[in-house]
Image 1 (cartoon, rainbow, N blue to C red):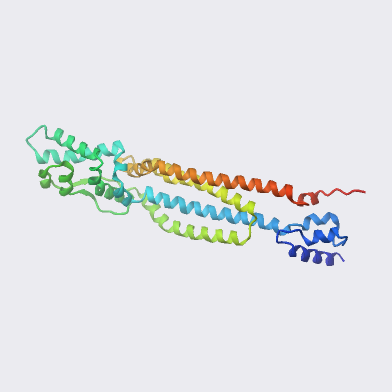
Image 2 (image 1 turned 180 degrees about the horizontal axis):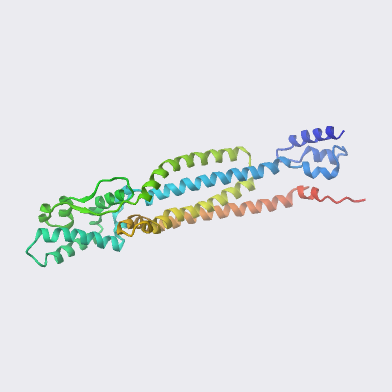
Length: 321
């Protein structure tokens, strides 16, 4: 008899799993003694109790993978992308130690070679190069040098970093520099950057695809609205932290820890040059995430008060004699 009641109860509950009032509850109020009253609370919404943690787990996995993909992509675009240096050399040259090193290297290589008998040649050339590097129109003249230096730094190329005589002529504003031998810069190669770059090239697309798959599975599991909003809100808040960490903190402060050379300031300059954009983007993610998470809290409270007979009331059912 107990087994028969159990199967009847299960069939009725499955029929009411669309979010409406459970047929089991209706049958109970109609006087049909399908199951003892103390066990009604266990049956009501048992499928929803499984879907909630399942959907939350799937969303959590999806956001972890999305965080890895987003963080790796941001790191590639700041610390590991030499072509971005060529696009915005002015942001890199804003770093004073790097700018000073580059100016003095070019001055020392050209002044004496162009005017060996002039004791004041270095002062004049130094003033010219400093003026060129400080002008917005002069920054692009250093773009190729900085791009090659960055590529060598992260292990993308093993070729030496060389400033050609043609480039020296444009920088020092003197045709005598055409006769100067090419200037070879001593740029270190940081093996940690090379390994990280190779790992991210494989890891980022894999995590992005896996994250999309878990998002799709989580949506197919038909999560309740409050679970969906809570998961999306928490995930967006986590993404805001990832953006600040991988787009600014790591590229701005970690590279100099691997090598004390001023050339490690190239990714630092790129990150600091986009700090406003990074903060605004992270703030937008945080605001949207906070709104969604707050909405999920209101949904849970509203559902608890609006449900005619809530689950927790059956678990502590009071019997009246």
